[in-house]
Length: 288
Image (cartoon, rainbow, N blue to C red; front, side, top):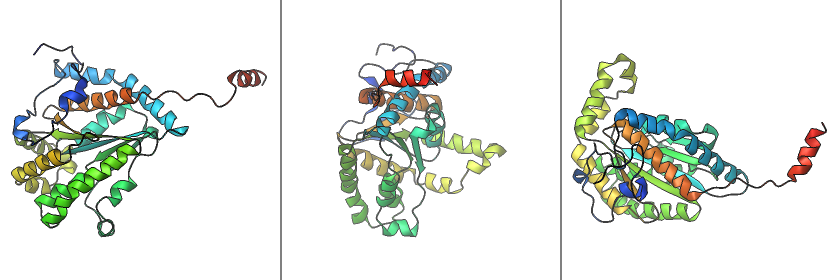
């Protein structure tokens, strides 16, 4: 394959390059250290991410302004992945380039008893981005076909039904003006082990370490199977899945931010026109 320019997505855009094809999914075929759309070094990647700030910020402000003046469009970025895959890192480095007033970030933990009684999608609906907003989910409704499946938190017929319910839900979101971006942050078990070890070796990172992560790690094959099923069964034209190679943190951050930028460009929000006479207001202001 011909070399691409440093920091640039290749032909078709990064969205197309990382999109999961329809049909069965075999995650062993996806290299977690790959760098689709990028041919530079780690330093190049960090600089390329910084270079996105101005344009990402501009498009985000346009979308926000559109939403404040009657527009109904919004963006929902769903981040899923094994422990240490970097959901928080993407939010810090990617979302950190944008204005917080136009962001809604939600981190989903285990549902409370009250939330469970309302159905698995209820709490998701409460966190959806409003018009003009970019919503980011750190974990999401997919936990209900991932950990719920692996840990047998509900019966198999229950989690099996949820794939269809998720597809209907996401189709409803898209029809209402929400652009859904679903990113699976794909890391290798070897890289996860290194990241967990780094947390244990550094006292300043002990707060990030959860002994339960090792318990979940022992279930890696079961989680892989569950993710493959989710990526296959909930990979729709309206809300396709993207696999983000995530063993290289810098590439992961650049890739997700680039995907968000491509999405905002395609939405092409425009600055709202003034609902007042601009020249009259200039004259009034000058007279004060």
